[in-house]
Image (cartoon, rainbow, N blue to C red):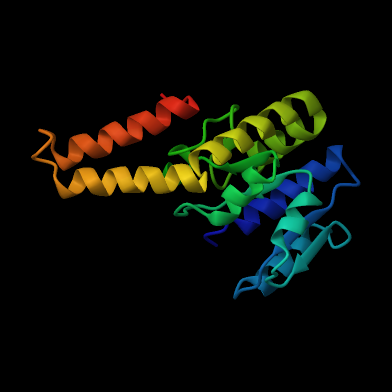
Length: 193
């Protein structure tokens, strides 16, 4: 239930009213599979859905996709979300604290309240209907991830953090001041206020 699959399936039922050829893919397996299959059947979406086991070819799956949707009710920082953004996919994700930490609605992704299938369907339909807007959001999301999660920059940032944390009193700042300064610097570079 944490992953919001009920919301996803109800959203799909609404999206197919406008885009009757739309296809939906769920990757992963878990204890909710039977319930998910029943919901798909209830909404008569068997021909629109594919459920795949856990896979090792996620980059290829992302490259074959048009939009990435993550309707979770709560998450940490899901790697698959970062992978989708890095792949240049437009993303529709839950408007939850962990996603708001690095995504801005309508700039890097669409952020939608969890558990609101109508709003999710509207967001997906809007992206499918507006290629220029979709491309811009996907591009900004990809740029943000590449900048914020660039390996070299992350290593330098961590090195600087550890150096400053090892001797906070020497430079006249508290640990909290150092962390706030680093976060502000990262946010300024990617346009987060």
